[in-house]
Image 1 (cartoon, rainbow over the protein chains, first blue to last red):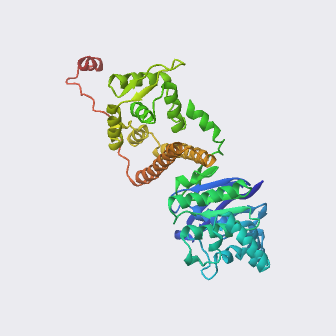
Image 2 (image 1 turned 45 degrees about the vertical axis):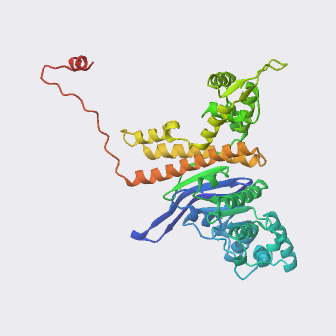
Image 3 (image 1 turned 60 degrees about the vertical axis):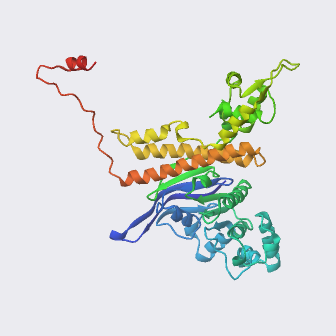
Length: 240
Length: 197
């Protein structure tokens, strides 16, 4: 099932001499159970693509569809509702609310959606447990936990509920190599369980976790690798 | 790769015969570098000649185990104590290919880089998948696998860097090789060729 579909999406900023083509005629589909990595040099349009996919920005031309719904067809309120219920975001700098505890941060999208506080907390604790956060950390504030733990909270918040599209912008940027890998494993696990994932990274080792890698240069998709056949083929190859 | 030192290291665990050594080597390296049994026995013979190992009497099933000697142990310790020299590593074809790509007429360097990056990234995806599938893999095999992952990553980073450098640089105009000018008007290309051979 196609979860995300970018149909001929372009985004320009400015006018006249200052016109910048941030993204040009991008075609991309992501199926449920698929993790796609976006790579490219700085300024190639990676974050623009991610913001458009998540409805945080609107295309100048073309359409963005999430689970078949054209985002531009929704009014502000309905778009916000779809973003809360269907799309999870993970950012490099976590974007946790500093005045809320880990559990409150994770529960935030559910509470904004009108779920009762008690029920939202219960689901938040389950989500925090799923991402491997010690239950003792649940009532701590963001500045009382480590970067790795904060990113786990951010991932719990992104995955809570029935999110079917997870967008991650350099989610391991500020983390050490081992913790970064743990974060990618969490993302991978969620995608394997049926979500669609879009991961922006400049780090090839992290793109290695994806099923498909899309390269961007100057706002254009210049190359896209075919989905992997599976590791068995490599094992066979290694012995020959 | 040093088969000689690998066998010495394995024999440090205890006496073993050829097939056991091959199996242990392949298990530690996840079949990344398959060894043929002939290579194992040839190396054992050389090690025996150099008194780094000694052959033990044949066992009941006709297998002849080898044991590391004190000299072999010292030799092995020396190997672990010395860094691998750059000169011991094979020449890198990719580096040579790109060095030639920037000086060869008609080659699209960006395209060469992109193709290579795609291929290496694909390898990296496959290694990562193997690693994810073998969460409880033997430590030695995990190290080998991670080494391949980091090398692939380094190659991609180098390609990214090269791409940026090439994009900014003015590519040198390919220069033809100097051709000996004929000394006089009656010199023909055929005569030139004869002269140079």
